[in-house]
Length: 393
Picture 1: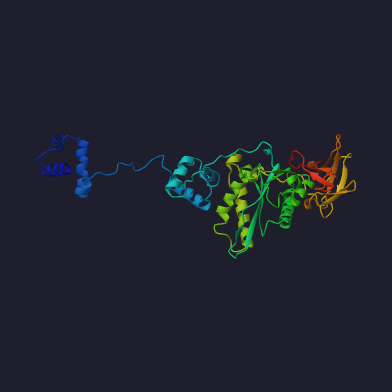
Picture 2: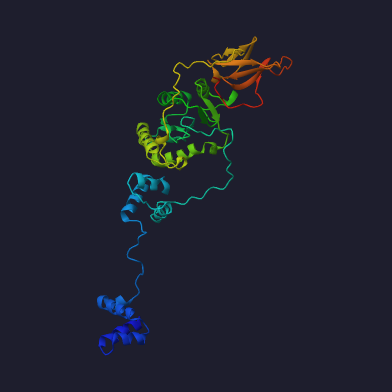
């Protein structure tokens, strides 16, 4: 800095030329004239080092694009760089949006991304017996999101139904509980509008499953009677229904922080979120398409008369009483309350075993054991393997 001031002072005397001073100070004439110009414009402060950053950059994200990017992120806090890039193209008409890595960097710079560390553990893959959907309405997933309280202190249990192939949310209903009657009414209303799926996948909790024969509950018995196959995930393995659980995380983040003032307002919030999820949110699992682009109503319609299940001619058909019992060969067997009022079939094998079926689900074998005083004279034993529930055509 002292040499710069000395250079400027000697040049101001007029006794030396700029060329001669530059040779003495071992600098180029361009640098010398630069120092003189800065001193004339800003005084001694102008001789200090300044930033060498370019005034402009052809690769820098334009300010208007950055503003749109931040606006969309704040409107959709759970959407990542891929989905925001898709919005910039299709919603705002930007032909050359920033790269996904650039969007992630910009979001991080503005404090809109929080890094999460994956919890340690072993993550098992999906079992092979679960069906991989290949078309809309092939597999529906049902589940209850964990309950919470609205602002008026009323319990809310969201019932969510999703088409596994298209990621389309068929329904998101705010229920007061997880009991059978409310779930049955809500499910029947959805199926009356959307039609029937081929397969329904559920976990092992109530009201979808039970500890009874075939793991069937009253609700899943009704599904099977409608001609729907029921798949149960493995107990303690939520990753078997991973896409549905991932959707629940978005539901919680975008509609429950905070919750609405009452149940009706919460349902309106669910409806708006469901419309955005189906029609505006692109999904990486379906090639960044919207679920509504792949989903369509099912051609299989709801059977309003609840027609009973049919069995082959060589089966003995029995109707389960209201108490869950059947009478076969003058012996009473307890099938379960879930089967009350429906027809079951008994198949007599060549080895003399009486196999009990509901549709084509092998529930148990009917056995007589009069010689054991500690067992009833007639009881049921489970088969070696309980298959998935399937409808017998």
